[in-house]
Picture 1 (tube, one colour):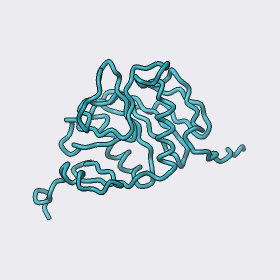
Picture 2: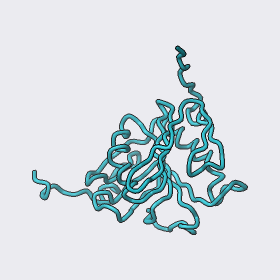
Picture 3: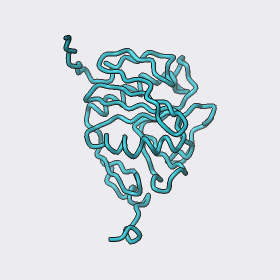
Picture 4: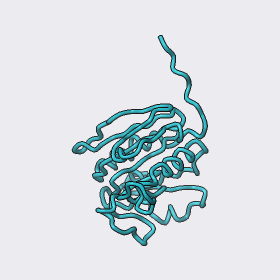
Amino acid sequence: MSEAARKRPTYADIEALPPHLRGEILAGELVVSPRPAPPHARAASALGGVLYPFDRDGGDGPGGWWIDDEPELHLDVDPDFPVVVPDLAGWRTERLPTLPETVAYTVRPDWVCEVLSPSTAADDRKLKMPFYAAAGIAHLWLIDPLAMTLEAYRLAGERWLLLRTWAGEDRVRAEPFVAIELRLAALWGGRKPPSRRTV
């Protein structure tokens, strides 16, 4: 079947999915993911808790952000990427003073985080990272709960600059949330990293 004859996915295709599945449209294709496995879910949930002091309603912390789990992004950047859902995303309140009342965000986030899983890691790196760069999102984190790593990136022009990779039980101060220290061990659900071999 020719490219022109193939039916392009629409938002109706996402709405028709069963509730236990999550849909995105990436590179012109409907990408369907199951609900995350416990290591993935725990890492995302724990990270959201750690970053809660930055949230505008987070109490006595630094504030200045809206941080949401699995926000639906409808960014007018590339017609082949009309619906993208990061695991977490944050908006500086100076750019987004109030939350939208619609199902999706049309304002680009200032930070996104993808929690990698064996079924999503390739799409997160190959498709979503370039899309986030094209959208002008300033900061990106990739968390791998099985490898127990955090990669922090900053947008430099049109490309991602890897700032640093942390692993295991490291304590982290990573852009754009350097005001607090993140204990990576809190993300791994009680699992311990393998002991490092010494030479």
